[in-house]
Image: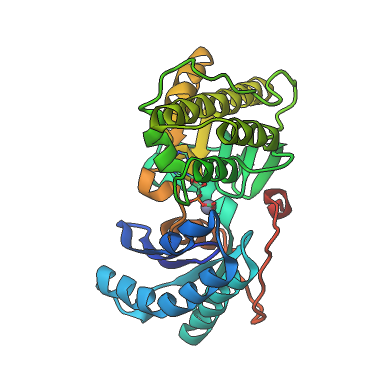
Length: 337
Ligand code: KG4
Ligand code: ZN
């Protein structure tokens, strides 16, 4: 079975083809992040325009890369939420229409579920149930993945998402959007212990997060100091230490709570090596296994949508209606059957 996947929920246009026997046979990605970098965050209108400009081209390139014809695919999967409404409509319109024109199943996908399932592509040992930490630009969630299509949210951010917080602090340190990778590089030059930032909600016994207080605290430190490059590196390191400790502690609580022995970490922030190292150390105590996606599949891409589409079509889940629908705010728990 071959599934075409289309991702347009934010600032990356991704088109890929997943083959159930061969794996990923095409992966086309156009990132518009450069166009947003001077604004410190995503400008929705710029994203919508870029998706429109590039989507047809990327679809054609994906078929060229896979060396197959359009009629050789068995379904079209496309993100319908959560995400930016204008951007979502582009992928959903193209995806639904292409499926109709080829007379094959259309498979609407929840972007967060796709992030959650992606580590299964390269980890054949990963089986349900497992605990997932979803850490992206727009989400910070701890999810109990009970089975395919059955999720329980154990913890959520009460305010800012961790990726958004990282990007804002990075921007204050004059690193362009999206600043996660750049902040991690800068932190490597920092000296440990020069700053000590708060660890919000770390002593609470629940699994929720809050990052807006940490963001304001760090921003105030940056604004009230004349920061040379060394001080910026020290701040980046202290900030990274703070969010890594909070994320690790909350994962530990969730492991204790669920008694699961598998922890999956997904979304762009999961690329952070300091976070990976800290989680690796923590799970050892619980004899739990830790799973990540391949780094190139951790940030937004078309493969994760094609793969989620493949799993759904296997379970005969598809969209019969011709109505083009998007769900900009869409909780994983709404998927529960
Ligand atoms: O999952 P993703 O590609 O897009 C969303 O669905 O939001 O995540 C993007 C987020 C950005 O906030 C970016 O700065 C962050 O992931 N990120 C990182 C790293 N690489 C990407 N954060 C920390 N360390 C990294 N190495
Ligand atoms: Zn994402």
